[in-house]
Amino acid sequence: MDVTAVVTIGSVLAGIAAAIHVYIWVLESVLWMRPSTRRTFGIRSEADAETMRVMAYNQGFYNLFLALGVVVGLVLLWSGLDLAGLVLTLFACISMVLAALVLVSSDRRMLRAALVQGAVPLVAVVALGFALTRVTAG
Image (cartoon, rainbow, N blue to C red):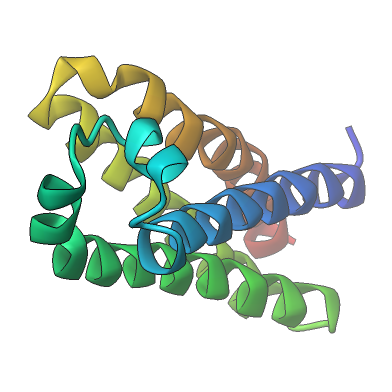
């Protein structure tokens, strides 16, 4: 397969992963106290959500910063700074995958959430990692 096609596929997947993490940021940092958000995260009461509000707000920004890492990496990649863009995008996507592993290792019931936040960046890592081996070899 052509390296450009692999980079394109990996970039699209990384972009989707970034969008998922922006959505998680919105839920955790903007919409946290809404009943629908509480249900999404399995928070039983408004009082429990209030207790967790500061932690969720902070955690949401971690997700936003991972998404921004992907976006900056993709901008660098597609503006001609191939190596820097690939490395930054890979770092952000690998961080997303590792965060998903931490989530599921802390509570097996979080498997679905971990798959939501980690599956797409994992596939992006495979594609972009392949592309990185071709960029550095040539």
